[in-house]
Length: 280
Image 1 (cartoon, helix red, strand yellow):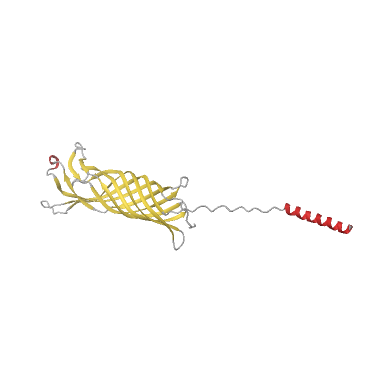
Image 2 (image 1 turned 90 degrees about the vertical axis):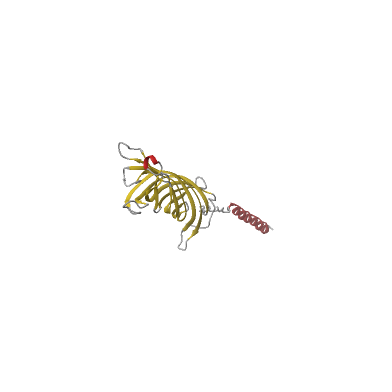
């Protein structure tokens, strides 16, 4: 009996000790790892507005339109004169992009866009007759628009570098010539180079950055070079009292403008923040 009692007490003591040890052991708690930083897609459409600065360089030549006594039509009087202007511009743009991974790795963006500039790029323009430098007017590039495509490479999730190219048109206002010599400096000559539109091509490029502190807001900076080709325009007489017969004169100007611009824009992407599986 006594042996059975001792065995029972020993068993109870052992079981209580095991229970206490089990109670003292804590189940480990595992925390989930932090989610990976989101990778945003550049696929989607956008609109942007901005401002910039532009410069025009223009090659000018002057020739006869119709034959004159002893002077055949097309005879050049002046060739190789270069002049230009500079000034500010405001710009607006709309476009769409598509992000993809290239065969050699990396992340690329391809897209198309259309933009318009409202400008005040002006400078002296001379050449209304054979007396180059004796009369001059003010030439103003006041509008330019372009449609094109761009290809970019994502340096990182927030930074895109790109090149662009396409078709562009520029509109120049009338040039009304005035005498440039004392004592009749500033007096109208009655001669006018009419308003004209040049067509050409452009190349550009720059960086675009995802600002992030406001979802959807991007910051873009761009340089662009445009070549508008050569066109000829007949010089007009708009005052019979000053230059004789009204209408077209016997002279034409052949102008070839080049335009360079630098601009900065704030861009709003309509679907910014959409996650993609791509990794950098």
